[in-house]
Length: 34
Length: 236
Image (tube, rainbow over the protein chains, first blue to last red):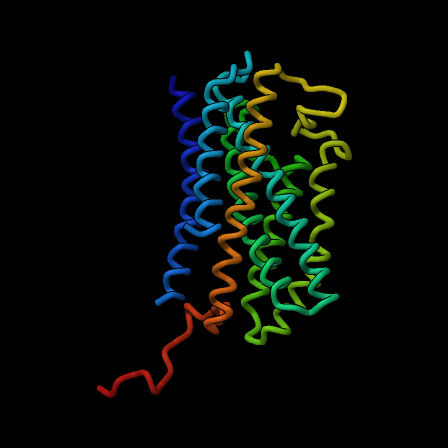
């Protein structure tokens, strides 16, 4: 079971990086609009 | 709702479907739950190869046409390539620690060449921050973007050229070394993450276009650590 949590954590951290990148793009876009 | 938002929304859905396949497919008997990591590791690094290929293509097009949109495409794709390579390496390290018993081995050809590729493209992004002149910036990065892509086949074929720790691909033209359900899950994730790359690239290009039309210059390397100008220091 703990192996599954490590795997879920790996997926979550990786997609958190992608989500963070998308959020950064959104903020940059909003800065241009302002 | 604009095109980019639709693309990003549908990409999130596609990733959700990919995750469902990744966590419902059967697992390898020896690797156990860790075999699921292939569903994110291999597609992330495939997309990194694709991204660096697009950067090379855009770099060549800039050298031929000298139009800013090719420069913007090269930068946008390299940025995504770096992100997917970094996260792809991280997922591989978690898998390696569990299955090989070690997260990293500099003696492994695939790992070492991938790390070098990551550093070279980090250098590409740093180079873009080294000149305030857009023409010089575009020319330098176009030359590097064209040359640096030689690493993509080097990384891909490293497992055939040097028989070290990293295994050869699990899906080959002559068949797959895993059950059908695992192959389907992997292919769904390949499609979903490729689509995610396209959506993020479109969003990144939107930002680059908007910044260019608003005349916002990208920051230069070292901007964040510059001392204040004397005129900015208040008298005490």
